[in-house]
Length: 153
Image (cartoon, rainbow, N blue to C red; front, side, top):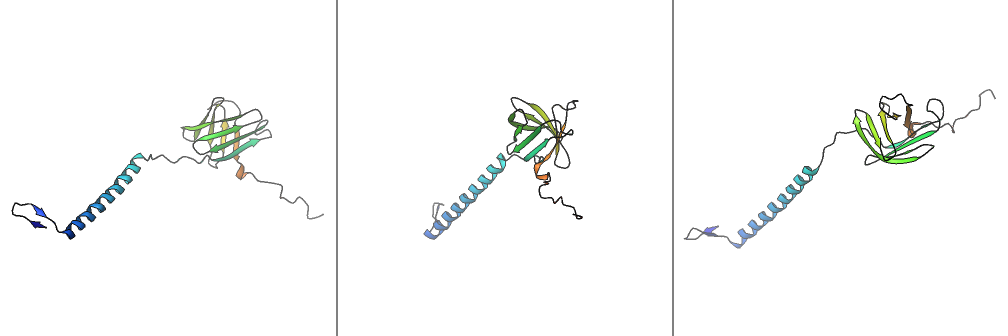
């Protein structure tokens, strides 16, 4: 930079190019910083909850009561429920530790999670109504591949 007699200064052509490059780099880095700060300021940190995605079913036998029941959990806290009488869809929300409410226009029920990824489905918390233990269908054994022939045959 060169100074004039009045105290102002002027730049050579090369100095102007360097200043412009520095300004462009500063604006670019400022944009990245603003984008990053904007992204993280809108991000909500949620406590990790249990993975309720998957199919769960129970049915048949005295342990489960008559009929069959199926719950399918989807992303976005949505579920589908079906039994011998009707099918329903709605949302699930955590109301206590490991207790979730299923809420829709037709049912208000609760599920209680267990340590083995299964849960109990019950109409009311603490009620004396039937409780159905439901496990993931991915954990239900299949018996159609077993060989029932005896070694003595």
